[in-house]
Image (cartoon, rainbow, N blue to C red; front, side, top):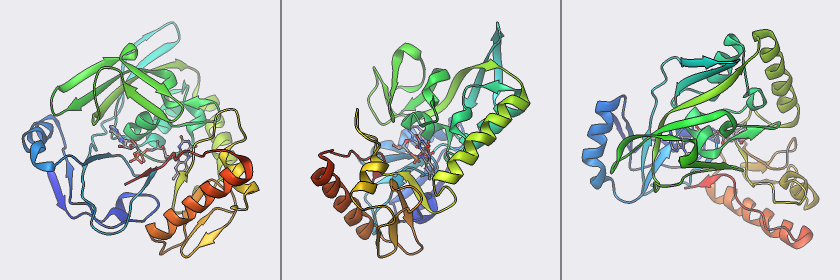
Length: 292
Ligand SMILES: Cc1cc2nc3c(=O)[nH]c(=O)nc-3n(C[C@H](O)[C@H](O)[C@H](O)COP(=O)(O)OP(=O)(O)OC[C@H]3O[C@@H](n4cnc5c(N)ncnc54)[C@H](O)[C@@H]3O)c2cc1C
């Protein structure tokens, strides 16, 4: 198992912000998980399971947690197929864009709306990442997880819940490491799937700063109210800058690191925005990003 002491959190998140964690552990295979289980009690209570860090704001300074990353990403395996449907097993260390590319190549439909979302599959499942009407959990049939107490367990659809930007195992506490997932995709053809992905990617690129250092949407959209981006815009936060960070002028709910932004100014800006939206629209915005 690869171990990195005091890893640089800037390199582990797409926002490129943060100090150092205590250590990062990269189990490469099932033997690595066994080794991790043995040293688990030494890691302390604060352990962060990390994917690509595309939905995370790391704070500056030495943080008191250790990080676990599962990078295994063998090619997806087709396990079954009936009546126009195909069951596919995928390692959670695979990147979401990589899985979409594989689906396009094999003409499998279901995830096209997720084009342009970065991160690994494990993070997409844990966040139930979604866009343009598609959510990661829609076609998900089972997940295989590891915990230090239970080892490796496969959990079928009735053992988990996936909702708006949340995923929960019904009978197992956190933290759990998602190792792989089984999806049921419908058959289509490569040209159709690829052209839908291209369409959604272009829409995203036009409306969101997807090529900047960002962590995606800061706030969840509140239930039955206007989207968080619109509420932020009404409160005057489109393009609002503090030091090295800003809410994007392209999409008010995206926080962008302009280069040397620190977590203090980022958190101040987020807090100011939340207060302003409450004052102006009466909406209590809830964070979508994880602040650690
Ligand atoms: C430019 C940009 C655009 C984005 N657009 C969208 C969008 O349209 N829709 C959307 O929903 N999100 C979007 N996001 C947010 C983010 O990309 C998604 O939430 C993504 O799926 C997170 O994956 P990750 O691997 O980066 O997870 P991380 O950020 O590393 O982790 C996110 C959460 O998942 C947990 N986690 C990660 N891996 C595992 C694992 N293997 N097992 C258990 N738990 C795990 C972490 O503990 C954490 O709680 C965007 C982000 C960016 C930067």
